[in-house]
Length: 339
Length: 193
Image 1 (tube, rainbow over the protein chains, first blue to last red):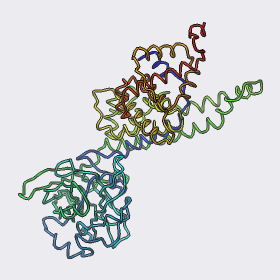
Image 2: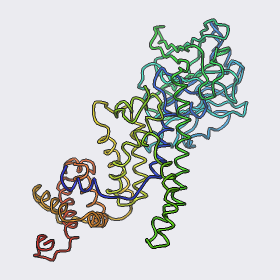
Image 3: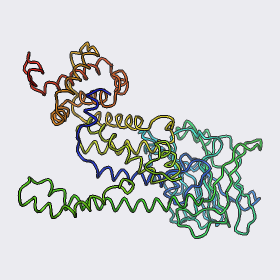
Image 4: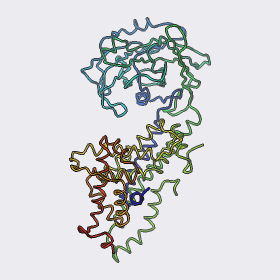
């Protein structure tokens, strides 16, 4: 580095400790909320599902083990026609009214709550890009439940299946369900899990896909599909806080092509002890960040402005009296590991 | 093994990707000063610099999976900060300083000028003079000397000719030197005595 570079590196610049603390906190939250990578457990809050399911289009309805109930589901629901508009207009995620809305699939959860999978164009920015994208809602028009939205900006690049996540339970259905994304060419999806009686169960799903016709109507370059499926009687981990609730045993998602060949498998694993410990540490860390921020505010309120005064006999005495107190306050603003 | 202040950057990134909040905080603590410095010196505005530094840190963490752990982390984050600072300057409505007469600047001439500035301006003078520079000049000087980017690299970042960058750097250094106040013909040695 040149001499001028070193001078610039050593130049005294305004303090930004407030922004630093805020950034530290946001960074910690990023870690807490970081989308787990493929095959890991997805957390189950609906808001998180929206963020985690990055690229979905389409819909499924899970069925009891071994039953092919695709047709039954269509008869059960019948609340909207595939290819037509949804029962209620989608209003999530900067919906672009000019784009139209297309029902990709209809179905029902295992406790008979009908849903519609609706694709529409959104103006929302994905990864900093300002162009529009396609979003898909899982809508439950017969109950006042939160819509689950996911959006994607391009092709599903992850193979046959991606980003499966488990909705533990929400206002729409009391039965856990799994959702995820599949790419064109996937004809069949099967989820296998362990029920509360210890038996292994497999459920079939009907895939909702953006067909070439739908793709043209939505101006989508890279269609893909989405699945959603109920897991009745899923054996779950007991006594965990809501963000960590999940299956007691792995849930395996298998996708097959039209020849019946297995294309890919994805697994949702139970929350590990390590994950639980990290969550607890994260909560504890967030509390220490809050403490530091409050200490910083107290330091600025009670000390900083006084030190900024022009020195004089009165001020000197006052500062001396405050010095111990202020040092204590300042100490509390320093990150624990730096002390 | 959890993240500790002694963990390497690559270990912290790996821990962050596992969801370790303490690792995220350690990354910010470790690199905040460098990132904020880039933003502040490039923008000359504390508030904007704080926002840019925060954006850069969080953007780096969001993109952590793309980070190559065999390489040092800080140049990567500083590059993100520099790009965000450039974006911020582009958003400002003020017209850029016109550099109508591009100079045929020899690299050595700018290097000598930079050495003069470094040798003769005290910290307060350097700070004031840098903040007084037109934004485009200040950005070029900061990217060149604080981040050690070559003019051709800066030109690519800004999508403008490298000759323009060399001119901005040289003009910027000239203005920094001018803040010393020597009259025409007076040498710096005479002034500083």
